[in-house]
Length: 561
Image (tube, rainbow, N blue to C red; front, side, top):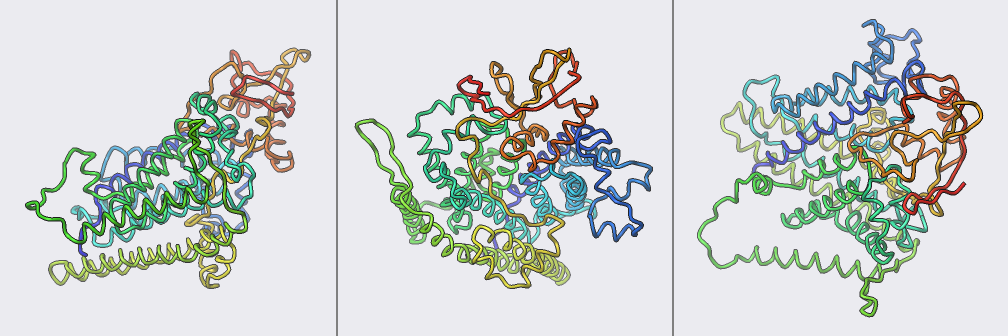
């Protein structure tokens, strides 16, 4: 019961998060003038209204360090550039120097990114921005305090408790991402045909997406079934008491994220998800990666009863998972055609009944798993040598246990958004606590790829311009598909935020993207900052611009107008 919490896995998590922070800050920095400058699409200065309130009142209403800008002689754009540079440098330092993977450093990184998020408007309202903020705050609890103490323990008795919160976040992310595909009633997800559209209709495909799109339909449908298994059925194994089940869950998630990285440019999102997956590992397994080998065991003897029961439990879990998958997705082998056949063998009503039945029990499983970590941490604290060390360990255990229970509690509100009856059963105090801290992005709801877009062709908003006011030419963006004869780029971990919003703008009415009006206005003005998102020959921009709606097929080299 008193086994040490994972140290190597924790360090791997902090190292990976530092790398993600570097990518996030650096990517945003190069886009600041065009997005938020005084001649940008959405000038950030309009988000900060100096109404005569005191600094602390302003910080309470809108938690951003940019309120300090005027005191430093900086305007809002310069303040954002400073925050991005500080964030990039600090996270790079944490990446290369272990002493900087410190709680105070991660607190600073979280505060810097939150400050940018508060004025970022639609260009920073992506799910991965919220995920980075939530993960970043958890890192404040997970990371040690190197800077304030010359000698820092390699591990603390409560480390298992705080690191567990990362696992809980991973569970919420993956389970919700799988569930919303079915609760949205999207016909392509229900018909298992979503991936026959996904590769060519995603925002910025990679060259490999073309090859993935050519795969046969039966394989695409089987891939959707595999996605449901990885995102819905496997995540509860994150809390399994059996180590090999957790490792199986880890490699399943890594497999999915790797495939997404290969076929699509999703900036730092998949890398951040992989970083979260490190919470499923233990030091023995990470040690194998580092070439340290297994710990030497005693002399071999007959298998113990617990070992036999563990193997039987693992085999039973795999068998039950395969049975449920085959049953509810009608899996069978067509020997004549030499292919898998699959179909959704349940209704929307049946799925919602199941979701209503399992949501709160899953919360209960999570709580029991957290309680076990708390009890183990309490035992380790009680085993500390010496009265003063024991008192210090117990104090830390009490403080971080309270923090972990608080974070778990507020996360229940966004997690149960997937099933509103369960959300309504939460105590009013839980909702009030969540509302009180919502502005800090400590807990968020997730649900990626809720509906499949581009059925019938890839929608695009094409911006055209003229150099001579007679001949009209499409203005190519830097990254999003335009010229169908050119291969798509590989830009991970960079996120071209204008290209992403152009993709969203094409999916709905122009009134849903009011920023686009400002964008076109800046183009007509010929503002250099707004023109940096285009790839024009010789850097010369056309003097007039307008937009039209088109549908394209990237993978078949067709252009429909």
